[in-house]
Image (cartoon, rainbow, N blue to C red):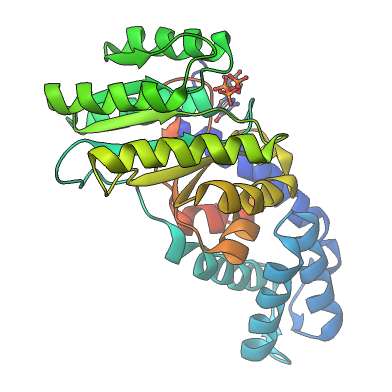
Length: 308
Ligand SMILES: Nc1nc2c(ncn2[C@@H]2O[C@H](COP(=O)(O)OP(=O)(O)OP(=O)(O)O)[C@@H](O)[C@H]2O)c(=O)[nH]1
């Protein structure tokens, strides 16, 4: 593991976004001047190029214009104002995943395309719950690939938590059914379920998730309590189309964005918040077990705007 703290890594990642923002804000640097249309154009363009998306960029521009048009502003003031507007978009969606289900266990379905960081995120999430003294169980519901089952088992061993798995090619719904029964039996607080990420076959995935839901509902009508979509920030705007699709096939209730360390595309988090308003539970800032962190909207906004 590198000697950097998670916050350095987070700042490092968003710093690339903020560097991109700053590069594109070069017309604004210098002394104090009146906020005019040309400057607002530069800010809007810089935000779009930083992956915040056209809608969030236009909204921030409109707010700046409304509040400060024609007033003296310097670069620092402009960055502060932009940070405030970004934070205003992010604050309402910052919601940690809480274990509140009664009866237990809280069933958390985790979905996302292969390679998004889903398996690692499940392990990190389990670890976060453990740190809060919750008992956790895993279910290897991605029976489509033996590698996925194996990978999750390795994490379960490392974390010393029980895992329920079926055979490769087996029925994910039956794995989930067994897991809920077992978790209820031993009194687990949370059950985190891995699922297949086959977006290329929407109908199959939808049928599979619908069946998991049906089976879960038979044991506990409240389950699944959470359907968490894991997104890879390095995909930039493509992450948004994944939200669109998974919302439709899986009824997503919240997001975790991974790989925010080291990408210049961290602004997509703001685009996602603005467009979908789904809760952002946490962010992934590295490959180790401690690298899933609560999402601090004010800090992220300041880093994107180049202030932190
Ligand atoms: N830098 C960085 N890497 C991450 C992060 N989260 C996951 N990864 C890495 O991304 C790769 C894919 O992660 P997995 O957890 O295997 O992703 P998955 O979606 O389960 O992918 P498959 O198992 O291939 O379907 C691994 O090399 C992880 O270590 C993160 O927040 N930052």
